[in-house]
Image (cartoon, rainbow, N blue to C red):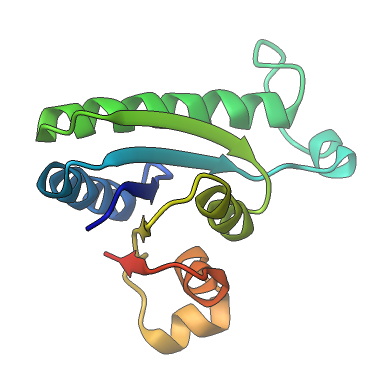
Length: 145
């Protein structure tokens, strides 16, 4: 049914719920599970205005990348606990919705699974949630959990 399933995680409870479902589906389909964590790239102006502590990485992108790696590693552990086998985790920087869709296309994913923030349709539309943007940009099936 699905050979490659892409699940986007950001550390939120909604994304962990999506991850657990993706791991179960991966077992059913005997497919590859790709976990993607995307951190938003910050401009030099944004980074210069940040409140990064002196003992933390030199710039905001490094701090965000480090956090994204932690999220990806935790996601791999959760997938393993659920029983998923063929699991790989990736960390990318960029605009989350566009990066999720591009990654899915580049890696020939059959399905993208993302978590919902639990907002209603009107709030999601007005705020432009990542899950809403992914569903509108993707050319492959998207499951919002």
